[in-house]
Image 1 (cartoon, one colour):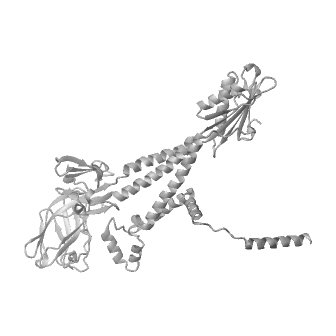
Image 2 (cartoon, one colour):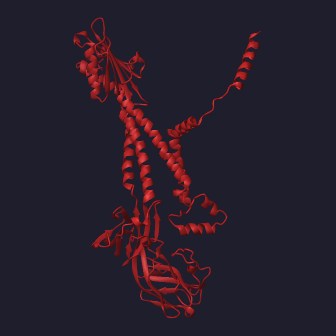
Image 3 (cartoon, helix red, strand yellow):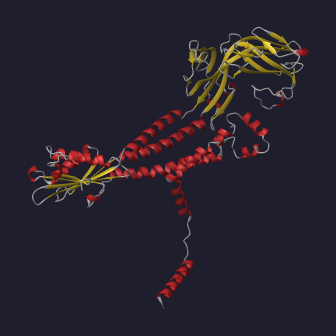
Length: 559
């Protein structure tokens, strides 16, 4: 049989053998081990970290139910085609959704699975001795030799002990081998802090995840608008908007109280380029840390929050609140009090919306704007030229009809839906618009009542937050930065040295260096070690001396 025929026969026999071979089944235990290995790999941890960032994007694209349920309800109502589909995908509850929580938990497990084995391996490496001395040190990236003259009187055993002492002073962990033999050697290692920093970084990242989860589960965030003279008590019904954590209980709210006595804004009146810009906000408050506690005068400023236990209160907004009184067509007072206006520019031109559902015989609504310092342009258009209330003015349109407040559907208090209302006043109507200064009043057409501008107050918007894990987040974030810096700037290095005695009495020393990973400073370290050895054994001779240095010292660079 020819060689070609034998090859074909062997090939066909191999194919038959492969076809008949039974592939062992992967059992349940082996499958779980494989899945655990994949989950705890660093590649998977990085992928899950990226996936978590991507999964958080819908939280900024769609309104979130914990922050504002009414907006979510209206969003779904306005988009009947796909609004409910998005709700079924939990895109309105992103941060508490099943899929976001699954990614978060998997990332947490993956990081723990990465760190624990590496920490165990690093602990074993710390307790182990440096690797044995290579037979050929000349193959190492950095290599050098020293020749000690016979008259120096330094035997090989003393030379290796001297080298060990110098390396220990330089921070190396040293192990001397065969100290009394013919060719004693040593192995030295340093840079274990690099792995410590790496482990610290990953453990700190786990700590950040835990603290963020604690804050999301047991914290809360709420907003409140306080008009001068108003009092806020830290109860659930006292907030204008309240977003609790997943496991937060309303009974955990500490019953502190706040009264806004006065709010002052100081505007720039000296410079020409920034004239009228606000430069200071000061809210004077009277607070009580408990119902039976004594009142305390405190001041709230921007970036200077007040703390009530774990809850922090921040100043986040301010504006004007005109005091308005509305009497209905029957002469009864249907509304009286300050109305919060929303600033829309730097001079506090503000939108005003007032809903009066108690007016009879028809409900009344008002919409317009407030001008702190009103003037008229040559075209007859009113505008504000200064943020201070130098000439306060209300400009309103009035409406009557069903405001829709009795249907039980939540509404935005700062928005008036006029589609189902009849307009009473307006610039294009015969009655014209309503223009009021402080102390002024206006009689509505068709006997619908009156409206008066009684005074002006200021208000502030405060944000009250309780995040139990925020201190931990700060601590672990600083630890992560410190660990990252250590892992970047500390290099893992190994040094070996071997000594021996020549027949003529000279002591021969050779050394080599190896870096664990990329190390651009390894050559500098080799030069520093050679300098230390030369000073120890040959204090009068420099490695760079052209007369004698080249005879006693050599390095891989010189070869």
